[in-house]
Length: 554
Image (cartoon, rainbow, N blue to C red; front, side, top):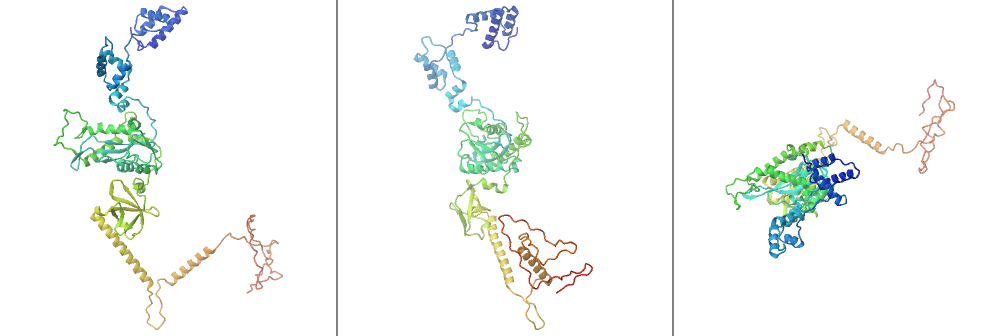
């Protein structure tokens, strides 16, 4: 006899008994019906008949007997909350104070009542707070969407100790991940806690396609970020809003709202950091945390190289479990158009701008007690410029013309300028001096009038660089240009013929010019041509025959 998977489902059992009672009321109940139900539930036919008797006793509804169970009272629930979910401590207190009665129940019964009354998430919240309770919540999955429809950005602390200039530190990684394809579009690594500088550098790497990150990136429709102040600062908002990118500010302690980037955070820890020296989340063999002074840690440069190699492997070689394709394949299979930013102008949008213009002085541009110089400043003393800079990076700044916003170039801090940068600034001044001398010499030659040498007494003749043919051609070209500039075709219609016009030799129709275009109601009529002067030739009364050519008159 094989029991059905529903043999303990009271709802299915209640429906089976209801069917048997229906057959019995209509005199169609047979032994085979009872035997079939008994085999389905894995019980005997006698047990099925008991179920039918139970239903008749409860107005046709099968109502199994429910054993009495111990339930928690309000003082018991208060004790559990007071002891932060510790049921054993709450049981001891309740037993000591007599809240369990003269014949107290066992701890197993009390614990069973606690687990029946509270959900695992609620008990976890009593022990560890709201953050622990949220780990038991369920969430909806977002639709996959298309590439560059939504990005997610986050910081993650590397769980690896790294040798940074002789100090043990754990670097931070900031990256932007495409939600539809799981492609890492851009990132940056920092040896200290990240700031808005890291966000701007990573955003620049993600917006610009090519280079170390392959053909991934472009401009997304929106970016989801957490409540960190570095993501919510004005410079990051300005860098994204220029392209119409919406920034979605997620509430704190809500990792499920940016599950794509959180999955990448866990992936690099499990797939790469766990095998590196200095891994901080490895199981400990001692209760005391000891630092091995002889442990060989990675250098910062080696760590950055490892991270970049892992990102390349993730984008091109890692097969996602659900899609059964790599992020690169998902990206190229998506035909959604990509908007690319001009690389030459990209740095303009990912830098913070100084709101007031600055002046180029004889020792460079002054800003915040710093002096910046650049080769392009030669000869621009007194000009107004706009300054843009990367936060916490004050060695170089970008300067723009304050009048039209034209990019001028990069300026370097005077005290931090290298010898090559100093030489280039001086060479720029030398080049301008050479250009000025050349222009002055040419102007001097043009002002000086030279004469031809003579062997006979004659008037001095100035030396010309043009031949006679060249001069004639130059004058002809200028005359044509003047005539073309004065010509006004189709400005005035032709007038009606005067009385001195003669008809044709072959018919009586006089030779008339093309009819002038009709003037609109708003057009001003042009004045008629004047009458011919007396010097005009008057034709003979009898025109010559067609065989004789007409006489020409002066």
